Image 1 (cartoon, helix red, strand yellow):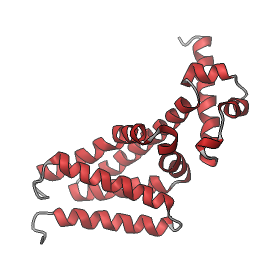
Image 2 (image 1 turned 90 degrees about the vertical axis):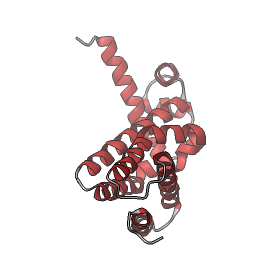
Image 3 (image 1 turned 60 degrees about the vertical axis):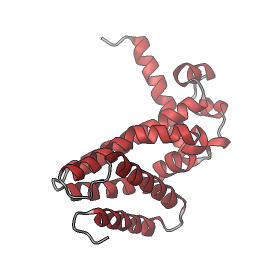
Length: 199
């Protein structure tokens, strides 16, 4: 049975995540101090450092949570189809839908590389989304639907393209138009690799 202490600790952690999540979605990472975060939550700096080792650790936990939810949504979209090409198409469209949402766009795409540093941001992104790309590419190769380039090379190319497309969409003014164009572009890139496609 969960003890009172454990319940209190989990409630404290959740309060920090929820309050900081709202603030990070509205503000620039560099403009928010640890003091402001704990003041908004009504907790102490000690609570922040106990659960997250400071502002950066709290921000990373929020990014990690958003990435986890994104991967879950993409997985559901992928699993809603049986045809390998359709699975990829649905997964890409769901990924782009996620990227267009305000909280994900601002926290993960715009502030993530700033708050975490490019290397750590990329590690988190690959941990959650990289495996989905590798799996999609391997399924297409196993079904002999695309040209037999090495799986790792193909996955790297598509992961890189999707990453850069997501960042481009996040920074553009007309995100809806960019979203549709990006989905079509990925579809065409994949079609160009299809067995029987003209080179």
